Image (cartoon, rainbow, N blue to C red):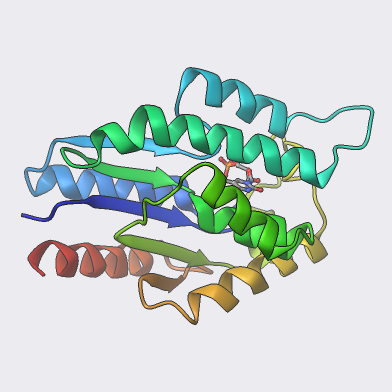
Amino acid sequence: MKLNKFIVVEGIDGSGKTTICNYIIYLLKCWNINNIIRTHEPGGTILAEKIRNLIKNSYKEFFSYKTELLLLYAARLQLLDNIIKPNIKDYWIISDRYDLSSYAYQIGGRGIQKKDILFLQKFINNNIIPNIVIYLDVNPLIGLQRIKNRNKDRIEKESIKFFTNVRKYYLKIANNNNMIKIIDANNNLSNVKLLVKKILFNFIKS
Ligand code: TMP
């Protein structure tokens, strides 16, 4: 029996993370695994959900990138201390986003320095590493097209250039880390699901 079972789904807005999180939970239940906690970032606790709203809203003042960063890490700390750390030994934790998002969005998208992220990781004592990160790689033109009818939040309203930089940073990290599984999510959802199923199955039987 594996000690930790922490699975994270990552990707830019419109990459299909929600569908894939739903699918992972569906698969686990089919395999008779029912001790599952589903969560997302930023959010996942009462306080972290409030911070999520603060982050996503638009304001009539400049939202400093460092304010955004600090709020994201405050939310992450709430989630880690209240949900992830107390439950990781007993539950499968499926999270829509985790710290890879901070690398991609804050370093790649906002231009925050990596050393600042590393400092915050240490400051919040984040020593929990996911077992699998599924990165759904999508061209921002396709991702944004998919969410064009949504009531977009502050970040979703960013430019193609912003999402192109976020994607580049995702790929830069994912290409150098075997634990991150890159899936081409530009088309054919059934193919994406098939690959996710393979990844999960291999993890369970390993
Ligand atoms: P989502 O839940 O719809 O994916 O929205 C979360 C938004 O927050 C999304 O635009 C990405 C952004 N985000 C960051 O910029 N950095 C982070 O570390 C996390 C977790 C999310």
